[in-house]
Image 1 (cartoon, rainbow over the protein chains, first blue to last red):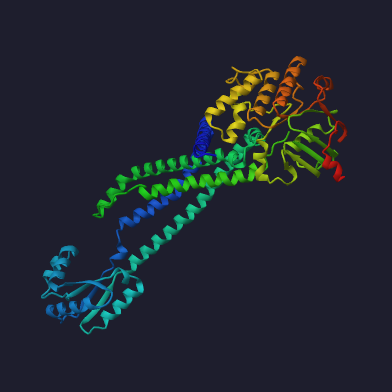
Image 2: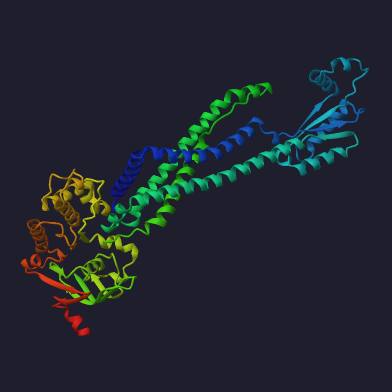
Length: 307
Length: 230
């Protein structure tokens, strides 16, 4: 068989499948709705997690550490200590925040300006702001760093505000796992829906399949239009799921932007794009193909011509 | 072309449709299979078209033993046999052209050739110009001839027909039989199961007579080798 006849056969199977779907619009639309909504749910969850990750923008990679020096330690000594701190393995950057700068910031953000003015002298110590290397931002590595600095005689206290960041990361990891589970469950649902739809279609076209086998149609030939039907269901379902998600994103964009602005963030909700979109369509079409194949494999065998 | 060696066929329900049947049909022969209904005519044709496999014995068609043919080779095997049914088995939701074209589409013939050969086949059965009609718009006799056109469109070396004239009036029946005779004259082997003895004898062809699953006449000229092996 030449390549062009093979191409002709596939085109025929595709057009035939399209035509059949178009001739039963109501049934087709209902099936597509089921598939589309089943796909939209895990995709929406995934989108939610991805947006939450970008909204909190790389928290996990910016776990700073505040090393408070004892109150008697001078700024000059603090600069020397900063040089030493830079040499500690796992430290990416060190910034010295002098007591005066600290007071300035505190006055600006705390609202206790008047109370501070009443104090006879600056109560704040000099501080080293340590930025760990990304590789050392795990909880054990951070704890190790904290202990290293705590042993220095000039250091009064080391504060590590990583706990809530780590918790947030854990929540996101949990959410990601939930997305995977939902994707598997709903994917299985889509597989079953398409498989069953194809099964009914095969039973409806029993006579045609019999005659086709009678005149020498191979199983592959008989199966092909059903595989295309399955893939078309997958494609249509993905299209519908995409539309549903775009609609949801469009509806949520304004309130989310408003909320973000209240937090002083320029965050904007985004829909599926690029690789995510490709994954949705490819995955859905693969599910359609697989569902159709399983169904066809199971049911076409049973249809043999009788005279 | 067709060789049956001590073939028996027992159906799962225990009924033995054929018992120890042996015969040989040469290339280009027109052979009638006669007998009452239930005598095993249909079973015999089903064994040839690989719709059934023999319980005992060997059926050899076109040099291939059907008993050992692998399932995946059955489609290719069937493409070399044109089958005509009494109930013609046409697809009601497709026009005549598509029905006749099916064996060629299945075989992967180019579109141009399909068009040419479908018209040629319809011309041979006298239905040229009815390509676009649905089978239900045709008379029973015309539907039967569409079935025949579908059987011959792939130019198979073997045609088997089960009661092809059962629904036809005598004139049409005669015409269909003449058509089969013409095919056999150009080298196509034709087996026709019929209960119409008069029609069969009018052609002076060989006649295989079945009664209760056994061959009672016409098994003549078995292969010399077959005789020797017994």
